[in-house]
Length: 314
Image (cartoon, rainbow, N blue to C red; front, side, top):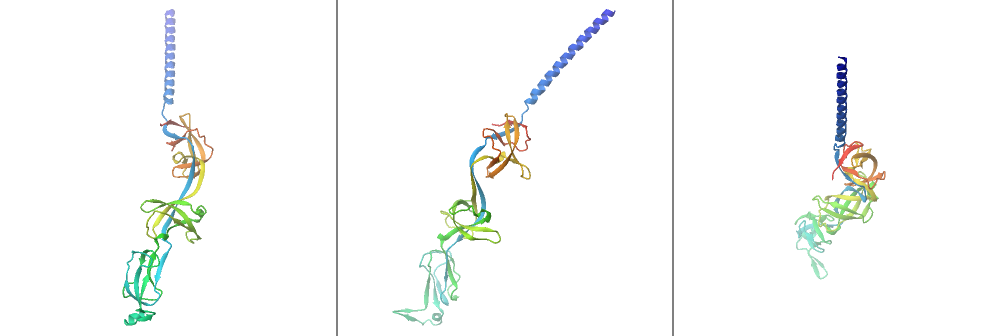
């Protein structure tokens, strides 16, 4: 009886041992499978770029407007009446074109009055002519109007004297040297190159801007006081180490800046940087000296934590 009991007890112990070993083996397999599954979990998809060397130019947008520097103000040299007007506002006139005729007050008082000058007789009618070629912009009197001596009877704008007046904040004035170039944008969106011709030796007391005169060719006729935008280069850095703007992250206060470097094709490591000159698409990295052979995340870095898992997108 005791022998049968001992044999049954040993059989149960062997079965328990076998079952335990099987469970341990299954647990180990499940653990390995879990680790392999975890290792195959995809990271955040990102695109990468390598640092490069480039020349960067900083631009500032400034206000400008058109202005005619030369205008002929035609004035009456005596008191009299306008006999007739030969031109209209907006007409193009040439030198010596007749603008209007005036009759002296004395001649208007007596039509029979005539003054003999040498071999000719002066009837009291004086022809007023243009001394400048351009466009007639003012003609305030009409036939029969009385004009006092010294009053303006016409104004002519010299089209060749059209310039662009650029208002430059004084802190940028030193950057605009003679013959420096910039780009003008018209209200219709067209762009035209221009160059600095002169600077005016005064500063606006309210806006603290200094005026520069710009010359541009090929723009055609533009009306006076037309508002323009000028894109002015302020400074240039040569052979700068740069990354795309999308690769540079910053905090809400824009006091800390960093980029994400790729390590082993699977991890993103944060690298704090000091940015320099910026353009619309590139940012100069002053410190540290980035590895030109390393990859840095250009898209997908927003919100990534240090040592985050990533997947490179091709």
